[in-house]
Amino acid sequence: METWEESYEGHRLLKARIGALIVGVALDIGPRILWLSHVEKPGVNVFGYAGNVELATEDGVWRLYGGHRLWVAPEKKPRSYSIDDKPVNIRITLDELIVEGPIEQKNCVKKIFRVRPGSYPYEIIIHHEVVNICRWPIRFANWAITVMRPGGVAYIPFKPACVDRDCLLPDRVVVFWSYTDPRDPRLVYGSDFIVVKHDPGLRKPFKIGVKGHEAVVKYTVEGLEFAKESLLENAEYPDLGSNIEVYANAEIVELETLGPLRTVGEGEINIHVEKWRLVPVAAEKELSN
Image (cartoon, rainbow, N blue to C red; front, side, top):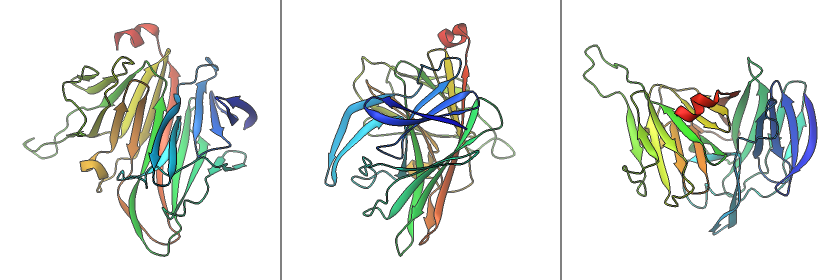
């Protein structure tokens, strides 16, 4: 695994080439993955950065920064908005990049990324680990959130499927947040996909959650298609059962996957795995979306 250091938006990054992809991990905050590009377009980061977005909590000022982060669900302030502005510990092996965040004392957790090659040159695997450092069990779901480069289009697969012999029962769920307008112009319903188009002119926040038959969400921008996929389990999920969520405002689009709610004992680890793919797409395909 070839690695080197660079500066990005005032942060020190450790960059690693894994197959046809370039991943950039922040060294001074996190755990955060702030960069992802393809070797055919090495200067095009498909992840977004919004260093000016911040939120005051009773624990201090939380900053969005951007890129990829790991939260625990359900969302609650200040627990979800844990301040992650301290350096991380990095370890590199032949086929794994390990990013270990500081202990979150108030949340009783420690967060770890394990970045590994996938089965193809354009694919990497991200293991999200949340360790319970409490002396008692805690119940939560792993929540993997990725801020994308502005100006793209998100796609949530939403094909129907019979779940009983006579196709009489409902098979999918769409979830709206209290601030979401179902008539929002960024939202488009197709027969097989739900589409969310980023519009920098619309400041009002928008969020949608889905429980369907796939645990994948895609995003096209700058002639590239990013997809992240997780395992869909027969288990209880947070947010009224959502396993895929998309958030948008004027600055950003976030692609989110969630794992099931689990009761995690002392010293145990809750693991959520995402498979990332990044490939060039034909211009006509991107324009037709």
